[in-house]
Amino acid sequence: MKRAARLTCLFNHRTRRTVLLITTHYSLLTILPTFQPSKDIMPSLFITKRELARAWQIIRVSGRFGLVPLVQAAGINRWVGIRLWWRHMERRYQNVPPPVRLRLALVQLGTTFIKLGQVLSARSDLLPPDYLHELTKLQDEVTALPFEEMRPVFIASFGIPPEAVFAEFDPQPVASASIGQVYAAKLHDGTEVMVKIQRPGVEEQVRTDLSLLYRVADLADHNPYLARYDLPSLVREFAAILQDELIYTLEAHNAETLAKEMVAHVNIVFPAVCWDYTSRNVLTTTRIHGVKTTDLEQGMLPEVDRREIAETLANSLLEQILLHGMFHGDPHPGNLLVTLDGKLAFLDTGMVGRLDRKTRELLIELSIAIFEEEIDSVLDILQQLGVVMEGADLHSLRRDLARLITKYYFLPRREFQLGMLLQRVNFLLFEHHIRMAYEFGLMAKALFQAEGVAQALDPGFDYNRAARPVIDEVRERYYSFHTFFADTARELHGMRRQIVDLPRRLSTVLSHFERGTLRLHTQDDLIHLKHGTIHRLVNRAILTVLVFSLLLAGALLLATNAAAWVTIMAVILLSVGGIILIFLFIAMLRT
Image (tube, rainbow, N blue to C red; front, side, top):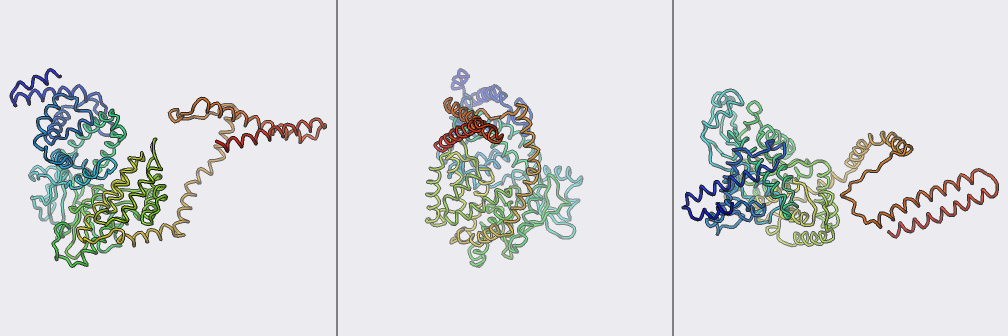
């Protein structure tokens, strides 16, 4: 390999590219087949020809945009041909900041990597703030395919072309995203609709990319620094998110669920789903006419309306999170419209966050604690929300959290937003070895995006002030007697089976104890006790058994009402057992 790399310098540019291609392909063939992707992503054990071609494309794009440090961190820089190609191509973008180069590369790599960038923009525990800020700019817009290439997807879903289904159908797309393209149409009853058709071959492309991502994650997992990020688990998590977005019927259900949650808000609308014209690869919804929040010109709406729209957006998202447990996960300006009558419309519900009841209750307590500046409560709740890993320094975490929340309360909101606070908190938790779920990062990103849009509409917007009504409503609901009794009844109902089953389990344990077959199973990798400590524990266990034996023997002898010497013996046994018991109790208090 090294010899081949040195020989490339002797050839012209075209010959050098050929040799690099051969050496890189050889490297991929010798390295990648050793990794086994998870069965839910790609069951193939060995790398396929399609994966090999896609890997080479990814390598070329990575080199073109100079993403050398990222790939060096993954350990792929060992491939000689790839290293020379990067060194040659990096000069083209040497004056472009690395976060911008990463975003441009993700856009050029297509569907999977655009979605990957959007997911990573919610992981403030993985990337620095400048990368997070740049990735939030990722807009899922790509060059449109001709309609003749999209028509077979619609026909495969409904058996007939769209012109035969709709009264009117415009073959020119209104929007073109990496997964699908959107067309304007009209039903026979005159209803205007938007028809989103999935791009042909996108599912196969996603499967190939996910397989490669898993292989690279497995390779990077051997790097001591990157191992702490558990990249294979991140890829599996991302795969589940992306595969859900490929199913348009799930997006339709998301839209309907969010619309039902917000039905009480007359100023919020969601597109209605036309189920007769919706399938796995085609989504049809009613058309909403309006203006993007970024296209609103000064004076287009009265100032009071702009302020109301900003507060509506911020509070509705907070209500989705805290009260309903399902929220729009990507409220960037491209997914928001202001209708002609001043209402706020949410579009594209492919990315949503879902929170279980326990997580939602903890987030309610966290929100109240943040607004009340209760640092100890914040730390306690965050520990319950996340997983405390080995090496966590809770004392340092408390100090850093106190400093961060104090800064949030004293700085102007345009300099330090609520979403930014949560992103910084997520990063701090990771630095102190507390791992949070993906939904926490998605929530922080969604709040950060919504707050940014709100401040663009109303420069004086303050989330602290605007969110007070929602927090007060949540507090009133959460601490009400009705909620208390409902939660108590729910917990008792959950414990009912355990309570009923308790006598049987105790009987089983006693039966094993009588037969001498009772065993205690422990996990070996959690035991780090020294031999001396183990000996002390064993000695105390033996003494405990001995004490209770002496006390039991003394009590039995005393109850026999036998001769005087038997009574004296019983008193001696009870006295000795009592003295040893006192010493054991003192020893336990000392430790």
